[in-house]
Length: 433
View 1 (spheres, rainbow, N blue to C red):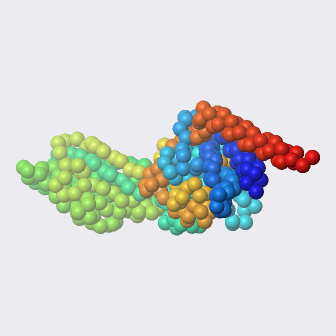
View 2: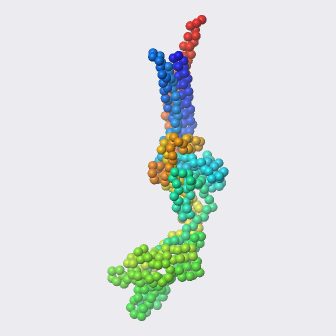
């Protein structure tokens, strides 16, 4: 009966607009929630096959969708581990309960923004109980080649506030000017010593003593020196000896002409380097190539260490943690070194709006979203990571209030339809009295 279908259509209209009202209420209540993605209700008409000359109302059906692909504005904060994604990517998190169980299984959830701080165990955790996840770095700060389509390798990011770190010295550069007058006949200048500090694998300080001994000829100038290197960590043992000869021609005067290995690692003429085996491992020493004015020289009558540079630092105490645009979680130490501890990947799926929405503005991969892939932040379609920032809610309060008025009017209209049908049915009942 068409009048009954009108009643059903009115009831369906009430239910559909009630659903829309629920999404509007949710959006408005979360207008100040960081990372909230607004929900949207769509109406779809239902058509029932009609016999000739008669029409049956099918009504309406409401469907809701979380607009996860929409991104809110970024606002600045004062916490270096407040992060937001500038782009379509999302970073991985897991639940605090899963971390505490420590059974090896960590469910991967996704977020676009979060405020993380170390908890009592050092895990970077948000106030809602979600723990940031990333790929742990090797001791040298490099990231192993973890699989990009699997959660294998992802670990909860954990920071040890009492962490110490040091870097051993592996490279050293010597640019020293030796006095040309010391290799002339009759010179009594003697040896020229030079002490250089370096750091071993445990961050302890040691010294290389480099002694330059001139070769004094009977007549003329030899332009030759013996360079002897001793290591304090090896009890003063000689770790390298090299005979240096300098060019005295007009075009290349004062530059290296020849290096002869006496002991220690061989001199590489192409790179101007050799290795010395100190107690903690080899150090690559650069003294310059043949004919180069940038390394060892023999000019004038003064001994001058022009440039002594090296890498490595002593043990330092952790002072700060920050996540950079490429998703690297870096630790800064009071000695000035900066070390990568984790890399936070950014995750993308073919259908972002197909993700399952969970509590705390987190999402889970579903068959509707498609399979995920992990990208390096700043590479690919996912965007980059912004620290000292949070993403605001995507709710437009003015737009939601406008939709609220429309929904109220539509709900009232459907209620009027039901009231009218009721009155018509009452008239039908009154036919027989």
